[in-house]
Length: 518
Image 1 (cartoon, rainbow, N blue to C red):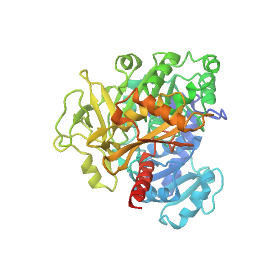
Image 2: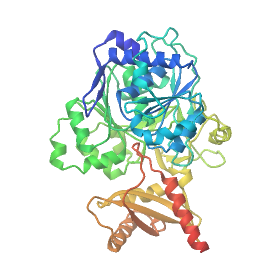
Image 3: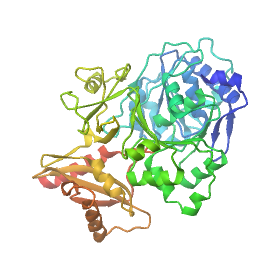
Image 4: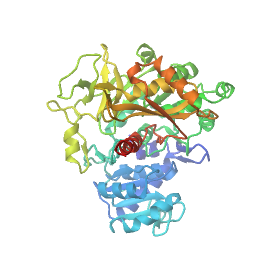
């Protein structure tokens, strides 16, 4: 179902809540506001198949504008609010956006864009005024709240996070379908897999520019449920919101789990979370010990999902299955999984290789303006696609991810998984976060380097370095133990849990090469 259906059927049902301010919108209000936004975009000259880009924090306007695109036959590209002006300009130009809607709180990065964007890109500011930008709220308030006469299904056109290079635009579908009751094909799959109903109260502590949060919010609205947005993740405030709004479904990344578990035990146990029936997590590997702690606290309601922006398919695993297959990301819910070597030959259970998704729409996506990258993602024989993840399946078909192909360390001819080393170190009680990658070595080719972010109140020392190395030796093979550990104040991790590892690795590789040549 789409927004307009629920606005007619249950106009006073709450569609959206901002957790911190408790500001809310009913379905009637969200429908009216999205209709006005759709008409504004139409008046600006956009037609079905055109593109808009949005750079907003978690504010009501985000879903208002998203639904305007989804009912106007437009592509909407969410922009990471951490992006630099260069990155914003690149994506807006690459996706061909006709309109950029952004929060004025980012004015320092937005105002210089005027000279860098095509003159055909309309720039609308939400909230705080931005020099050279038109005021979105003033413009949209002038529009009629009547539905467009020719509504069409739109689509979310995400760019990958860019953790392994330039952000990549992913287009999944052509926009030719008139609106009836449906919006997106994957919304029905979400609803079935995660038991979404009109009584669902879904909370996301993550920003809506994160693909999973935006898609899930749209799916919840597709079923007539309530979406609770946090402006910014805070462990204590997240628990407050879950209790206050009687949240039934929530979505997390492992770093959030870690911060929740560091709250005082009495604070965690004092909460009434009896209405909470499903906690979904993904986006990054979750250390096994941390997930066990969360299961002990929340019970058998935790579901892990693995999917990609590119692929119409995903895996999932519930608590009961995960306890039997710890570390797995599950079996396919949509599509099929195939593990292949570099030549494309399928590998037996237990043997790591490239993870391919198969299925009727496995090759339906393309990387926008990058046919070579699109070709590289395809299997050489079968209609399967990969994003470069490495993993294996067990005898029962459960998938285990071991790492990204791009980050595999080859030391002395031996393949080393950075994720395996990270999982070993992160379980130490004094380690808050860790990044592992390969740096050049004169004899081995590469050696293992670890950057460690310590828990609050912990001071780095040579003694602690030795302790961590000895700790690692008890959990992983000696050839995988880092040759060096460096303590850092913080690691560049996005709210979706992904680490900008490529930038870290490249910086340290360049430093190592410079030291060798000097």
